[in-house]
Length: 415
Image 1 (cartoon, helix red, strand yellow):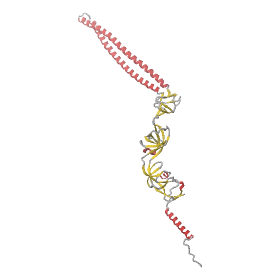
Image 2 (cartoon, helix red, strand yellow):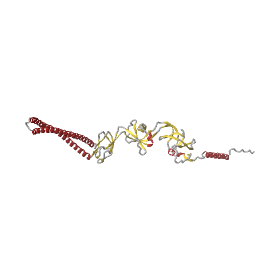
Image 3 (cartoon, helix red, strand yellow):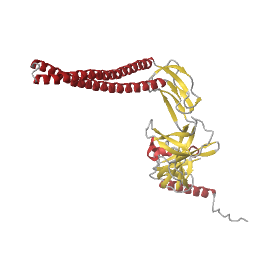
Image 4 (spheres, one colour):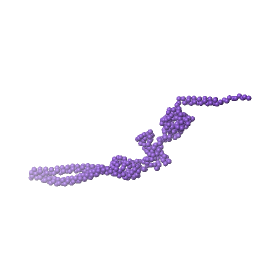
């Protein structure tokens, strides 16, 4: 007996047709969704995706620091000459006053001898002038003594002849002769006193001039003697003679730098910083570096404003002597630029050089595509950017370089 066969509701043909329709609808929706937006297929394995997070933003930069002595003393030649002896080389430990070099300068020696001869000549002239002044005083006393005797005798003759002339015993001519003699001797005495006074004043003036010249000559001679002593280059302080840049027989000029002494009583860190941070670095800022498994603290003590090749130098002192550091040792230093604060963080990457931090590609929840999004970034440290707007914690962002993406609005991420 024949039975009626029921037709199947979902035949393979109908299923295939339905799937085809659904695929077509999905394709149309995809086209509608991406209408007016350019896209690019990107291999996900060749990009870096970072997740936006919320955390503490610590603003710092990493710079290279070089350990230097806390104080450095430059050895400069006070006087020029040629190197006759070199007693110490770089690397030697010296004490204050230790002899390092001996220089010779024939010109200085000859000048010193000539000036010394001049001084002895001045001393002789001064003594001769003083002796002449004493002799002149004795001569004046002797002359005045003789004149006084002559005047006394002439006065006696004059007074006696005056009486005789009044009594008309002698002639007027005899009387006048004795008066003239008496007057001449009296005037001669006054002239002699005045002349001797002038000679004495002149001698005193000469003595003062000679004494002044002698004092200056002695001072110059003392200075020249010091210059001769400066031909022996000695250590001004105790420490490490880190370098001596001259050899025996070399000729050096006055003021030329010939070496350096390092004070071993302490060290500092000299770091170079990009000129971009010049306005943000000032004394008191803190930093640190890792040494022997410990974090060593530093404080900015001095900022050198001169910029060379786009960088400027900063001195940092140790908060505590770490022990074991050596001159010339270089280490990476973490230099703080501000206090830590809570912020939205985005990892650093090559994208910044392509966008300037104005936009990024944000991966959607499906993980299959990324779209452009405008953002705003703030401060930066070697690890993170501070996000001011446009992103939230949990967003996934492509942080590798965008160099090969052109101006595409959408990136299709493929595995």
